[in-house]
Length: 97
Image 1 (cartoon, helix red, strand yellow):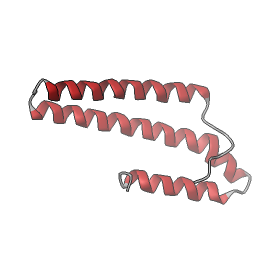
Image 2: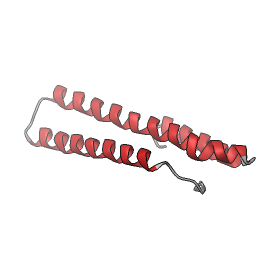
Image 3: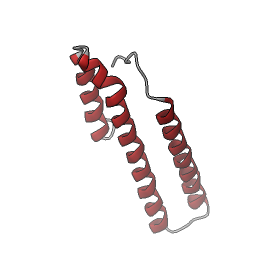
């Protein structure tokens, strides 16, 4: 997949990085929970929270990518940008496979 010439606005990059840092903390918390032999139920709830947080990052990235890359490319007649975007969405929805 080709990278577009434009990129996300700096504010979006900062927000996404902030969210990813929080998720990183959640992952460390999960590791700690396993080491402390916390209940599987508690661990599963935290895994669900991490998955939800990752989903919100993905949604933010998708929205901002459409605005900053796909939409401008489409306005210039570049249909490949839309095809690449749809491919990435399909991979994301399948869980990366």
